[in-house]
Image (tube, rainbow, N blue to C red; front, side, top):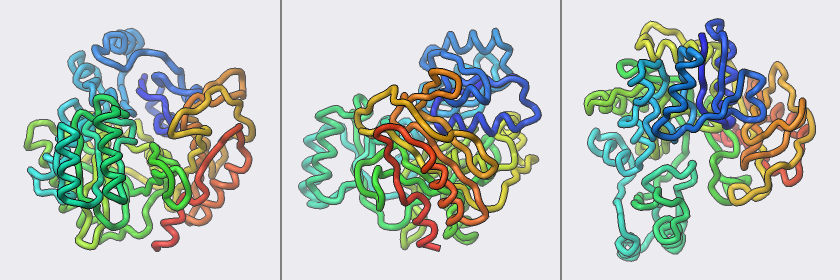
Length: 424
């Protein structure tokens, strides 16, 4: 089978690695890929923006039999709709369903329509109205941009002043562009944050995994928000009873609600949840794998992601068995100096980037400049991923590998996965 994978980050590197484990695969293209994905297939440069004419032409010329979409931007822009018009098999949700991530206002209103637990919220289109609301309430809020902001359009304010500052940055300074045309002010929820992933073919769904991301730049969840500095899976304190509650109160109403509203969901669906004293509550949806959560979920899957994608597109999930390895997986993100702000590119990467039985290095923001020689080309550069029978050993193994890699200005958290040990 000839396959095209769209995307170029650490998530897509992990997806490409998993895809190559399928006996169905004959040829893999990655668009645009990165400095490390060449080891899995052929990188190609094609615009991933509407009207997708060059993409369709390439797929037809190369006789691609399956397209798998990694990142959210082309999904929200309608790439699945366009490819399906041309009778091309594609894994991912259509544009209408992708609004769950593309518009936080749509997402919150969908939750409200279907009685799915979430924090109380208000929507604002003018900054002065938002300021007035905060002054009247005289407390802190979670502030969210309506549109996509590369995982950084959320401020969990601790004070009223921080709330006001977030409103200003989003709506007045336009820090996230048009994503801040509308914002949500949401009540803060207390509890433990976890991520849950399912795959759906529009009629049926399978629970894939739980994971815990580490969004803040610095140890102990300090510093600015990022796209994710590391993750681990599965979450050891998510017991069977809690899984059943999440399935009954959140997952099933979501899948059934989308189908009822006329846009059945096909693809991976991410549930960002807060486990509160009153039960699990939805913080956000992502209409694809998280990054870096994909880097810890896919290595635990015995089943190739390509085989899962085929069963999903063919609406045969109810007949499909997904097999997993026992144990835990941890990934540590190595980031450029300055990230999540401005950062330098072209910094030489030194050390051991080789794949080992229990440790993988997924490239994210890298560029290959010569055989075996890479330089940095993004904010998040590498994802060092380790697998072991225990969470503590997986953590130790990941950091053993991290110690063998270096580049000028390299920054990373030293506490990835420790929440899972403390809370067990």
